[in-house]
Length: 239
Image (tube, rainbow, N blue to C red; front, side):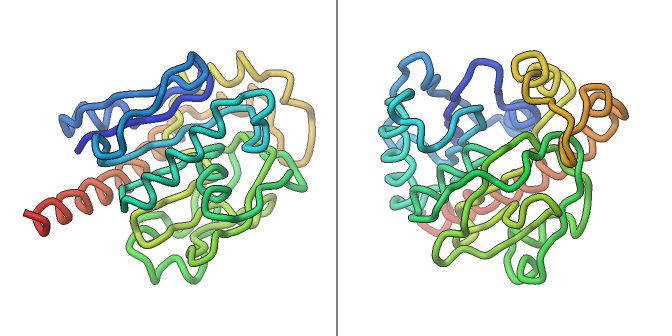
């Protein structure tokens, strides 16, 4: 399975997705959009991973490459590719699918639980996600659900935490790929956002109990295993 990922800032990488890909021997390529890289041909991608970043989906005047990125995501979705969007990536998928992206009532930064919705169990992706568990968050915006999407998860601070479109396009507002080093990188570059608030934790709280990152990464592994199996099924059925 050929994985291509879109990077918006140099300090937000793949996290645990990278180790998973190595274990599965999946070739991985990247477009460093902030550095001027152009996405590849859609035909050369099996799984598109869209990572996070501090910008908004609406910031095309400041980041002109966002417009091209949205068009590329749309082409990947139209081609029925597997697509996984995380944080900003999920917001981009929602926007491309015609949904509104807007400032959330609260910034949500740190460790807060997410609850699986009643509808989540009706989808294969939803059944892969845990019913309730801690998740890592770092976002100030949220999205409405795209038409036809199934709502998978919510938190107290943010109603729409995850959705799926047809078991092939997955949007996660929260992070399952974050490792302690990648959390450290976020803190180092975005420390100004750690302003005391109801759903904003201190960097000490974020770094405490590092075993929580292992739990997150296991859940990300389960989701990636599902997407890998989807790719294998599609390849065999087309062959």
